[in-house]
Length: 555
Image (cartoon, rainbow, N blue to C red):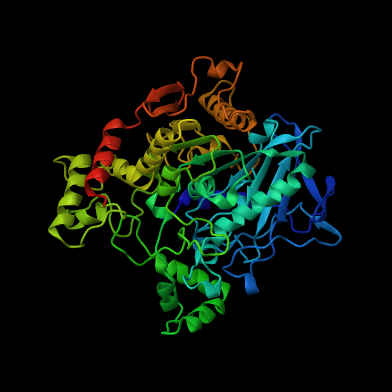
């Protein structure tokens, strides 16, 4: 699954990279690891704040730490230059990110944006997206909108693809998987220990992220490893329940791609570990191109591993759904939501099936968490049921995009996010969960206002500035300015509030609406569009179809 817009964000950010020789001492502080200098910046209202770039929070994950859980960074000597960006983690999608995007396995850094105000401020920790295959903190340096509020912003870089998610079942190798997610946990521990030096409040931390970053947020929400490390969570366009988050261990396919195949697992592990960064990246690209007969095509090396309970500090030992049912999650307020037409970004980006599918493709429409015999009459009939719900008697074609976009959006994002929200609200009504549907179309959207679709990641330009020439002033009272103001206010009000209530007080842009949490009887959601209204029963017919579908076919 290629998240093209997130790659674009990386490309854009490289146009405004500071020179690697810059060492402008705008501000100098000392934290547990040592002294460091950052540089100043101006927010959207032209007020000054400071950015500390690429602070190491873990030892370089190389040598004995390659593919393994991270360890805390060592102190440094002298003064660390936090005025320049550093390399991204190795990217399976690096060839799409442009020739200037550099990567290195020594990549476990985080950025801190702060006004250094005297009183401790709420902290918001951003986890980037990119299908767990690509992306970096370098794509989200345009913090001018968020920094108009009294918060401290942290952005976390973590290992991706093979480097962050390779797993072996045998505990003797100490590579149980989820290293990239454990990077995020260590970064949150770093925040607890160090954010006070940036005038952040370690007792008021909100994690938020989009796409794979949203899924990461939700996985942290459910992981016992992250207990006590955050106090609010916002999962944008991704959850731990989405099927693309999970995959069986694929080291055998990787070994084949690297010519490391053997009947001896020791030899396979040593061979993979002895392979260069570039060879591993190239192998990941090859694996992604291999059709596996599903909607989310390609063999994934970028997915959650359900670890053994006997593992050392396992990230997760049961499926998210099971954990939510049993109450095994971090019971803090949660915002979770979608963009209205998620898959409009990459509706044709499916190697195995596209909008012009035929009867022979019907079984490819079936979710991968439904058990069926491939090539059977049962598989054909299950797939036909899905086709007929979205298309009726119409023939799928490249010119008939509306039903295809709805299907892919529901399959890859919307239904599972709806389902897991409903499950939590019904099982634990005292833990507030707020749902939203982002549906703004303005010039801020990645495709501008020339489209009728609000696609995956279209909410991001209302939180971050992606203009390589710097932040530009939005027209007063325009849909762009109002949309940005509303998103910033909702997200930061949630982060600042003592009880996790996202409703701003005394703001004229919110006078006619109150965002209510989902409860066992009402699936409330905030429709974030120019009208900004509270509604009920998200895409009701489509969600009922999938409710009944899973009741019928899931064993």
